[in-house]
Image (cartoon, rainbow, N blue to C red):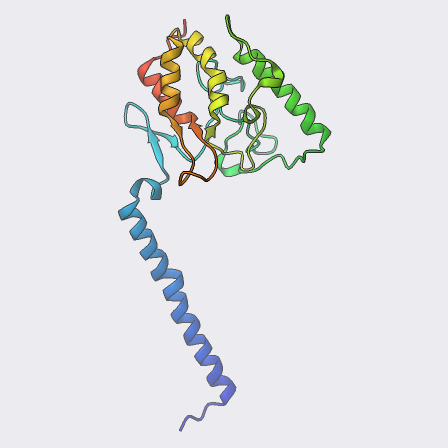
Amino acid sequence: MNRLPAPVLRHLVALRAMLVFSVICGIAYPLLVTGVARAAFSKQANGSLITNGKGQSVGSSLLCQEFVDAKGNPLPQYFQPRPSDAVPSGAQNDYGCDPAQSAGSNLGPNSDRLVKLIKANQQTMSAFDSVAGYSVAPDQVAVDAVTASASGLDPDISPLNAAQQEHRIAATRGIPLAQVDALVKRYTGGRDLGFLGESGVNVLQLNIALDTQYPYTGK
């Protein structure tokens, strides 16, 4: 006959249940899911890493990267990602796409600051992407070229955004526009499951392909 009081017995039962479920849900289940993921989806489970032509990991297909010089100026020989607010507060030499600082601007559609920022970005991108024989008006610049994503880490740009950058890339690298367009189409992904989201162009993969097939000589 158990001499422990009923309240103590109930607490012991609850404690045993907590320990059992902690082991199952906190240890066994995560290990099982991780093992299955690594076995069936090795690339995704390891961060969807992207390698360059030398086999070196240079980033992830899930995260954007900035292609800028030491002063934060966009490099004309590369496709540029969306603007990014993923920057540490007061940081120096950090111009966005920082995976440890995922964030949006939190500016709403009625924000005067956002309106001014978008107009400034339109002017900047219009000038940046306009080359001899081709120009894009400020009010025609792709929306995602002048607005940041909610996370600040979006790795893709819209096909329109990529198309508006093709002429600059071709002129800067000295290659035919058709070859740039072919690369863009190769790295344009469709909608998830055929109907979710929109088509997108992975900027990092596209720029790696550019460097591999049409190295920039700086001339």
